[in-house]
Length: 149
Image 1 (cartoon, rainbow, N blue to C red):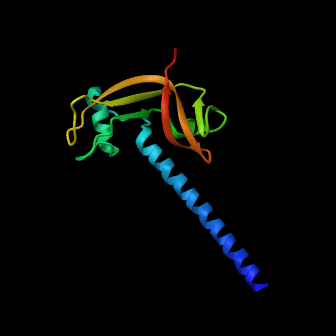
Image 2: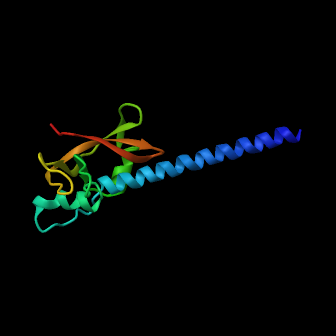
């Protein structure tokens, strides 16, 4: 009988560890999402033309050895983005949800011919809906923007 209770205890411990690991992964993914995609209030720069250059460096997506090719910064508070994972968004495919509202954002494109360590970006400002991946009610990946037509 002791063997069954030991197995049950071990099984419960493994389930708890798996749940803890999944929570840690979700929290880590959410923090990465915030670092890579949320800039609210919008960072003020002396020259708007260099917003993307500055932000990509500050957020460690443009380094001495790597230039991320494309990134979007959302200029809205985290509560509004997180709400897309609930009532403020509609399910699309799998864990993807499309926002009901449009958000101010800046899309940063790596300039052609730009290489690390001198990553240079062109930024495009817009107000668009977004499609995000949600895990446990939190955004973890910005899939795309949806132009308003």
